Length: 114
Length: 114
Image 1 (cartoon, rainbow over the protein chains, first blue to last red):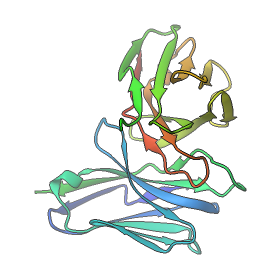
Image 2: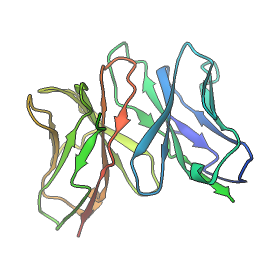
Image 3: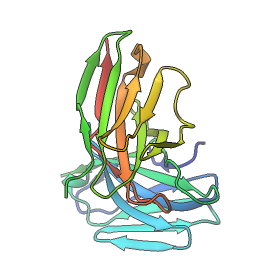
Image 4: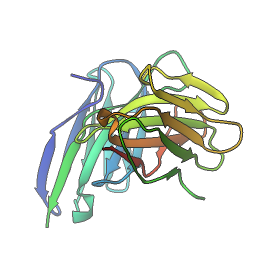
């Protein structure tokens, strides 16, 4: 599997339910970021979690990071129809300092049924 | 504070023509990244630039593709002699600093090669 691989590939839930998406990666990282992309649009930055953090919250979003398992999860609580989108995790590899390009997975396509 | 600007939003070229994609980073951002997204895929890193310097072009195809970020003006991604396989969405992102970077994405340029 490639760096920053999300699962499931697709998720369909009822409005009001919680949605959980997972991401696995292979190499050591500086940080991990989650992005949302609506169909045919650009990416919206949701949250960044650093390698020394374990959990982070932003509104209805909760992100966890387990560096020992090289995995992260994104939880969206009380989902809304407007949350329908593709969600990507992206990792910034720990290559000894300095910036690198992000490595993206293929994404989880989330559909919220009204 | 305007976000990352990309133009054109849509670009149609015939095989063999040149494509020029422009990216203006957010105000105060001096780091620019280019990514390519094929249909139903995640984003693939292409190149990372700072003003007048290419920092990392490890994701850039060796031929026909070039990028620049001059002292004045936008960053340019140039594709010479386009082929149908170049059809994709090209996204630009910028960040204020290189380290522990939180990248902000533009709306993308959708290139179609006929």
